[in-house]
Length: 147
Length: 197
Picture: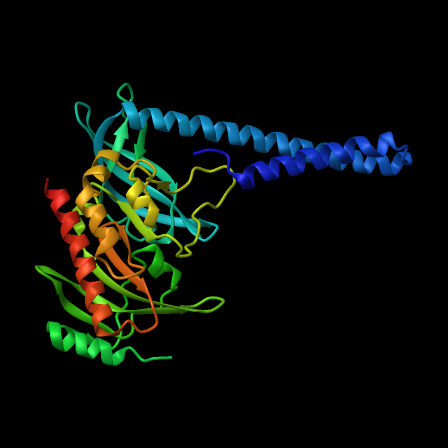
């Protein structure tokens, strides 16, 4: 779970191209209006790169936290109570799941979870399906759903 | 292009299978989803191995060319609670990558603990699949069997209790189809055994 080549490429493209647009016209002494337009585009692109980088770091931290829960967490089960989708991302349904979470020592609780899933997984999310979970021992409502 | 119908008829007669004109399995596994709703045609249903029943059929679909698989589908519902997804795909077979962003976590994780297995297959699972269960499933004897016994190109996908064994071949003949059924039934039995442990 880490930034892949596509992510690195996007950050590099927007960051380098943005910096080039912002700096080069000024260095080569381009007319003020042209330099201003290019610099504006450049700054926006650099901001996009910064935003992507921030998002990537956030995802990495989330993945690291999920890895910790997987290694140190309590193994339990989640029974699908209901599942539905009202949106797709890259042809994959964004599933809204209502789950009956059962973690040893913490009893049962009803929780909600949203996951983007491939079609073959989404179609199997039917009431009654039992999936493994790993829950944070200190806060079982924080859990990794194995699907 | 050879018509596999006669091989399916011969297989059905030899194994007591019910011949089906077509069979729509639904979007159960990635390979079936690739076919975008194409049914199995021809197909046959019945005992595929000892105490193992399922459906065997041809899955053909077009992308830039026509892909032609022969597949055996067996239900192993007890597997879901242990391993929602296990894909064991022969190296060299082109499959669609499941990454969709540059930043999101992958939907699957490669399992690379068995060198012997990884020489021939690419095994992927749910990102948080219990590694101990996988180690037990892919025991040395099972890895040895996978490397030597199944028909050439054999791969399998286990997704939410649906086990799909497959070979990519135009016309495997009745012997090839029988080998596909035997191999998939063997994998199903192995998975059931591990679930009962």
